[in-house]
Length: 136
Ligand SMILES: [Zn+2]
Ligand SMILES: [Zn+2]
Image 1 (cartoon, rainbow, N blue to C red):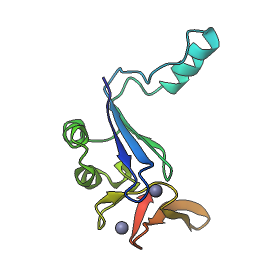
Image 2 (spheres, helix red, strand yellow; image 1 turned 90 degrees about the horizontal axis):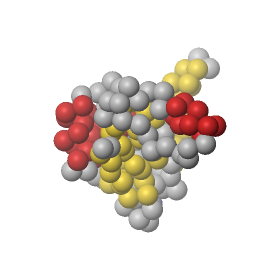
Image 3 (cartoon, rainbow, N blue to C red; image 1 turned 30 degrees about the vertical axis):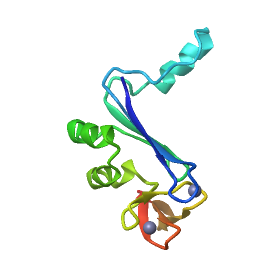
Image 4 (cartoon, rainbow, N blue to C red; image 1 turned 180 degrees about the vertical axis):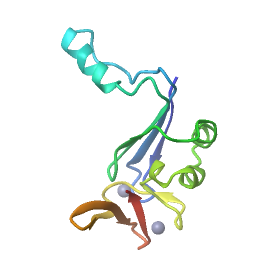
């Protein structure tokens, strides 16, 4: 069964982000049993043969395959955002280290940086003015 945690915004209580760890072979909950839907589900789950972390948030959505499963599992099972951030800052793009708090998309100011015309990284500023890299 997937382990997941929902983090809420420190300012407004809205969902800031959801982080889920899927075991190897585990499929993302499917749609219906109609043929077209099963094709769509198969595409959703094209990475299902590998353990993966899915991050859903207003600032960044990302699926990652390269991570320390045991360490991630223990941090995620207790909802330890600081430990997750230490493992990979992209696990908790909605979380600000100095504030030790998560914020929703309305409370982050985000922008993209480009290097020579190519996307380089996404940065954000929390409501208290701390800046961090969200994704690269
Ligand atoms: Zn902050
Ligand atoms: Zn908020």
